[in-house]
Length: 156
Image (cartoon, rainbow, N blue to C red; front, side):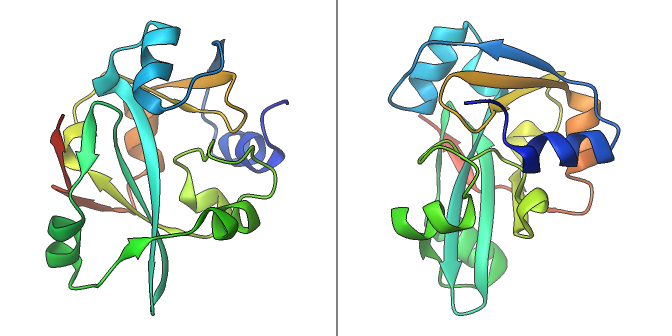
């Protein structure tokens, strides 16, 4: 599968230069980081949440676990994980479970973990389980500039 059109078009529209890095199929973000030889602290993964107000994409390092209670406190929301069926519907041009951390490209609000704030470069799932997109930390921060920045995870 190629990079989803939504991802490609969004990055092009925002003027972000990126590289694509192939990797073997893996079962989760931590193993993807290992397969691609990328530090887990630099691999951004997305976790899609929902409540009565709608969907929210939380972006955290692959080496971290989302703290659902912390994000609920920080945002005064009662969020739960979105279902696989909902994810398939929201990210139709992506392989199931390969959601790129670009909620903006899909019209979804985003909250970014502060642990990604000073990272020199960022890697993330391209949408197909076989490739990562690599962008500079500066470009990633620019993409996330209008997103909430909070402490929402802790290291595994």
